[in-house]
Image 1 (tube, rainbow, N blue to C red):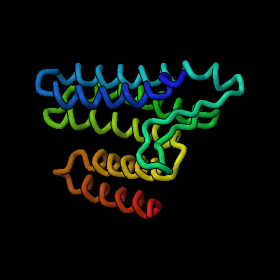
Image 2 (image 1 turned 30 degrees about the vertical axis):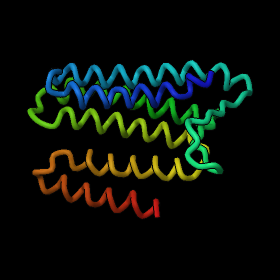
Image 3 (image 1 turned 180 degrees about the horizontal axis):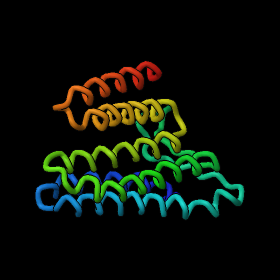
Image 4 (image 1 turned 60 degrees about the vertical axis):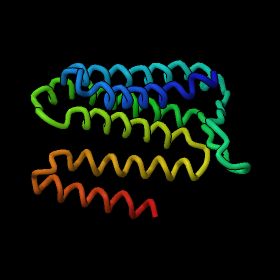
Length: 175
């Protein structure tokens, strides 16, 4: 069961790695389908944890020990499952829609799908984290991805202004 807790994050980060390494070879549609499938794998892994959580058990997983008194851990209970399902489920729907929407884009498609996968991985990591350091790092990743996604069309003034607003609004609560 501990392996299932790591699969959503691993699948999403694996998708980012493939996007960045094979971005020159894959077509725009293939990049979208790859991102969608990676997010769907994360969704399926979270769904597979539901029977354990619904029986009243809690999943505690240590990712690695960073410091003697501060290991990076996951604590998965009913509430974190619900939010992880929302993150990967809605994320999968957005990525499925993006396959057709981003098909006409000439540049930045790899960047878009990599940012979306990192954003979703940050959300999953945020809701499953059991210590404040991991929560803070996840929040910062989400904030930076939001900044880059809102400012995706960085040549347009409206996108740049919106991205600045997002950066301010996500970093003020972080501090």
